[in-house]
Picture (tube, rainbow, N blue to C red):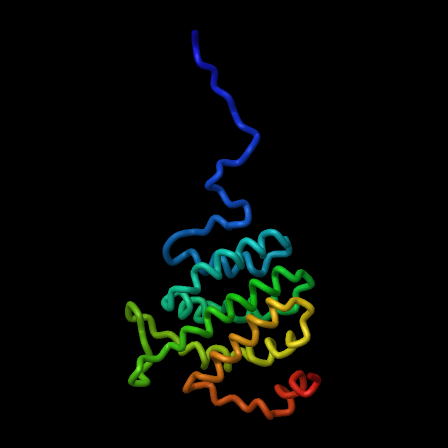
Length: 175
C-alpha cells in the first residue's frame, strides 16, 4: 500500500497572514517605508505590524528616523482606516520610548550610526502637532497610544516644545 500526498487548503499554523515578509539587513526599513506609502490598505497594515516589531530596537529607530519614516507615519495618522491609525500611533509611541540619550546626556550612537535623538526627530518633523489632531479619535486604543507618546516626549531633555504655541495648542484647546 502506498501513501498519497495531500495538500491542505489551510495555512500552516505558524504563518501569520497579517505579518509582512520583510527584507533583511539594511534593506528592511527602506522597504517598509515604501510599503507604508502604498495605496493598498493590506500592504500598509502589514508594513505597520512589522515596523512596530522593529521599533523595539533603538538602532532601528535611529535608522527609521534617518530614512524618513516619520514623514510616512505622519501621513498615516490621517488614514481613514482605524487599524492604520492605531498601529501608526503604536509605532510612534514605541519610538518615543527610545530617547536617544545616555544617562550622562550624550547622544547614543549604536554601531557608529550618527542618528538624531528621537525627540529632535519628532520636533523637526512636526510629529507632535500631527499626533495632537488625534486627541478626539473615536478609537480609545489610538488615543491611549498618542497620550503615551506625548508623555514620553514630554520627559525628553531635548523636547522643549511650546505646547502653549497657538499652532500646536489648538487641538488641546478643543478638549
